[in-house]
Amino acid sequence: MKKKSFVLAAVMVAVLALTGCGKKDSSSDDTLVMATNAEFPPYEYYEGQDIVGIDVEIAQAIADELGMTLKIEDTAFDSVITSVQTGKADIGVAGLTVRADRLENVDFTDSYTTAAQVIIIKEDSDILIPDDLEGKKIGVQLGTTGDIYADDISDATVERYNKGFEAVQSLTQGKIDAVIIDREPAKVFVSENEGLKIVDEEFTLEDYAIAVAKDNTELKDKINQVLSELKDSGKLQEIIDKYIVAE
Ligand code: GLN
Image (cartoon, rainbow, N blue to C red):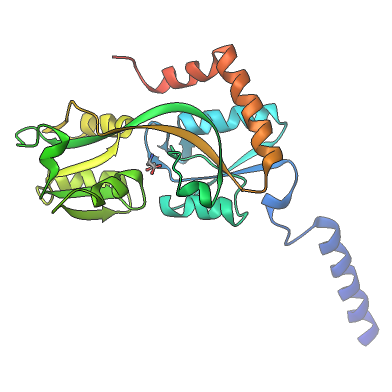
């Protein structure tokens, strides 16, 4: 009896070892793990069960070029950079704006697009230019550049939400005066909600890039190579044009 269970245990250990049970997917060489926050249309958002969008297609094109399988981890926006920093994810692709303070924690690839922060207001708002935000109640998504800029506006009260659309809902309900958020998601949210518009003057211009771990120069170089090919071949523009209709 004793001998039997010993043999059984030995067989189980062998099976576990052979199947590589307990090994994380992300540690396998051919999986490219992307951390994102799929609340950011048209860059990353849910279509049914699937996460789709510009960033997803760019990451997929990179994975294809590198002969890897893309695995998307949907997380809170303010965890995207930490995931890359701690090695939980290989890349952070989340409409991430390149910023000096972020460069202390992760590296960024070359930029794949320019973006802007804009202000969403109600159609009848008295906020006409960015300076009018002084003393107002401003909604932002936690940990975004919008959050950082809103914090600098004198006398303003900053309301932080986990999702950009929650800030927009709050604006619709009259709980706040404005939302500072990235231009393309702003356009999507305004088109989906009655009575909102975007202030003409943009708040700031920014560059989006992909975050990689600080010591992972090899991956960064490979991605930069693929990005440059995607730019030259027109494929990058094609992906963007699929999601953003030119005005
Ligand atoms: N571009 C902004 C930032 O990097 C917002 C990105 C996002 O909400 N996904 O902070």
